[in-house]
Image (tube, rainbow, N blue to C red; front, side, top):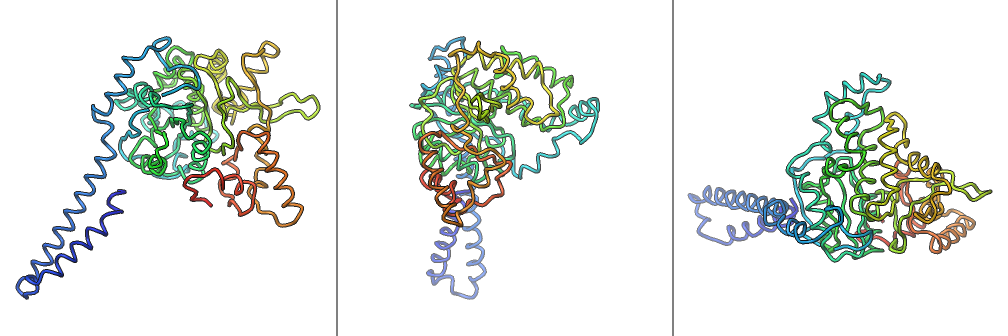
Length: 439
């Protein structure tokens, strides 16, 4: 209730001034009327502001708000009848879309949608069938079926590049650390367009969370994904059908996490662009990169990568490597091993390709996005306590400015760490934040 919070105190103050300045209410007989009128005016102001606030959030679901996207869909030719042009060439529509205010809570509240620990395959499948209605990301409804038209309408803006993120947790857990990632993206790419694939953020609460960025005229929109559409024409289509029929073991790892691994591949295959996890600080433009992914670690001896990661993916639409990744996901899906359908998956596929990879895609060195692994990221958050530590920070910042595109914050490990004044992270974000609430 943004408008309510802003203007209710003003409405009450005005009402009091009017009533106290009108001497006709000073008569003892009329004092009860004074109280009744004050209450009536205040209540009317509250209702009016609530309605205005709700109309502000709901307007884009009216037919007129979707008209532009549908016209774009009919007017612009696209290869294969789907998707938009190549990786980093885009285009702008209204930045609002709302459904009911769902998704209040923390990441912990998603725990109810993880299969019971140490359950058997049969027990997990039975559990999933009973909980299927709670997996709202799988739900197909009027809003999700607008996904393609909304994407095309949004990317009909004058965008210099297009980015995607996913968010599978409640909207209320999208906090300052996640906003930091988006702010750094727009600080470096002020004319980019960002689509967040999320049913929970595609809500009134999600709009309020993103509103400071929208007020700054940055192009960001959360959209409820249409998984049947995204997976159509790929091996993931059959996998989703089997999952919905209860013929797939969802595993002990959060299904939301594994769906995020698959959605990022599918959305890039469909539209092309840049996928980023929500725990990156972007340091320099990515527009010079094309058909690239990053190594997480490298053998210091032979300089060959030892682990790839899928937290940053930059690919053209319909790139064959993405289809290989999707096919590997379907053929080898294992919901019981963390990372098996994500970082380990892309590592397996590229390792099998070997020398055949040629110049079809590029593997960036670890320093490009992983200047610190998850075990050492805490050092980036700590302030210097000695002269030696101060010199290390200065040297690290100099190195990052030359060789680095971004810093992976490893939120799973660093979420509860305070960004201490003078630390590497504090120094980096001081020049790359827009709202800067965490400083």
